Amino acid sequence: MARVGGVAVETIGSGPGMVVVPGNNRRAHHYGRLARALSGAHEVHVIERRGRGESAGRDPAYTVESDADDVLAVLEHTGSRVLFGHSYGGLVALHAGLRQPVDGLIVYEPGVSLDGSFGASWMPEFNRQVEDGRQVAAMTTFLRETGLLPFKTRPLLWAISWLMLRGPGSHEAREMMPLTPAELGEIVRLDSDGSRYAAIASRTLLLGGAKSPTYLTGVLPRLAGLLPDADYTILPGLDHNAPDENAPDTIAEQIRRYLVRGERHPRYSSTE
Image (cartoon, rainbow, N blue to C red):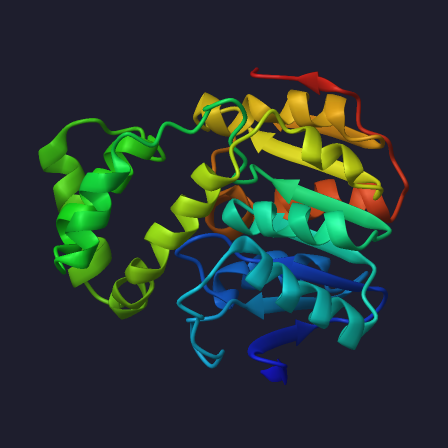
């Protein structure tokens, strides 16, 4: 990995540069398949956000703009003109886009809350559990309240959380858990009517999956109506982890079609 300022950056491929911003509880390597799928047409630079891996620690006075600073530094260093963000990384990408236009801004289910769409009543309990070091309990709360898994029963969610945090290869999840409260706090702090995003001048593609919770996909048509040059697509059969785990090739194809072929996406929502 190369280093740009305080962040490590993993680079693959050749061609016009693209910067990828990982989501909450994600590392750069989680986007390896997506980067490889795009590497034939782009030089892909995946950021290791602060507090993770070889990147510097995160400032206690963290805000989303701290991540946006790093994104803008990587865009400048690499000469990249395309930006992709997933989940919370999508929120970071939108805020970077507010500060600097790019040729293409693509986000998948960005962590944007509009008029209270992201319910936060459970966060004090979650934050206490993280602060007390009760990580399995905290992950169970997180999974139950965010609806990112199709399971609802607490015993099953507890078992999944235990595997995520105590099973093989779980050290990364344990290390990233303390970073989550501040990021969720930023989503809540930035809740608004979305009018701030009307200042994004970049051509923008908003993607989501039909199997994702509605609080993640319901903001996409609203954002598409606010941004001056934006399209949105809800992709059938995909969930929140399509870019990093379940369908990176599909997401790469959407990005290629939008950028390489210059294809316009219709403003529609499909749940077929």
